Amino acid sequence: MAAGLHRQGFDARLVSAVLDDALASGARVYGISGLQGSGKSTLAAQVAAAAGRRGLRCVVLSLDDVYLPRAQRLRLAHDVHPLLATRGPPGTHEVGLAIEVLAALRSGTGTALPRFDKLDDDRRPRADWPRARRTDLVLFEGWCLGTPAEEDAALALPLNALEREEDADGDWRRWCNAALREAYPALWRQIDRLLLLQAPSFEVVPGWRLEAERRALGGAPAGARIMDAAAIDRFVQHYERTSRQALRTLPRIADRVIPLDTQRAPVLRDGLTRPRS
Image (cartoon, rainbow, N blue to C red; front, side, top):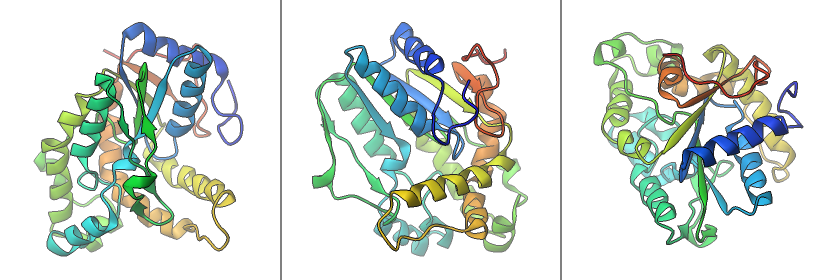
């Protein structure tokens, strides 16, 4: 396997195995889940390209592309909790839009694909969304796909500095967890088969995210800013609770698992594994 994902992406044999798994399962919507920086977008792009070489029509949709527009998050920050201004946690996606898009792609009618501009921290205008026609396979990737909500008792104590200092009463984490419990299962049910890129721990995420920020700067407009290590450490704390829940639960939920090492390389030469029973 490749030593990492910085330049080469995933090994071609693994990409082919993922595509074979999707096709053999008969999935119309194939989910790729994994923590921030695990290589979901890279793998989805590689699988889509491999599908194209086989003459298949493949579309990629990211959970990130259905983040709520900034104006809506600012309203939530004012009306519910200030931390909801930051995109990422459950409750900051337009779940209904994602369901609508996936349902249209599944039906073969075609639809516009939402896009989110992370540099502007806002959804792009609908006029800029690409149009997808009939598709043979939809790859849906996202950092928390398939993750179930936590039990209420697990929310009692803060788990990081962000929660201790900015959510001492727990209102934000309870609101996000309620969204994960009430809104997201309908979206998860749109996924026919789920693949997990399994990170070794949450502790690798800040470093992975920093690498991603530095790579993104290479294609960013002149003068664009990236987050430094301190800013990234605070940013990923917004994701930490649900990320740790994903690490606990998804290895048993996913249909296929690719364990990763700290360099984001698959640790098993045979590629895909089934979840432990």
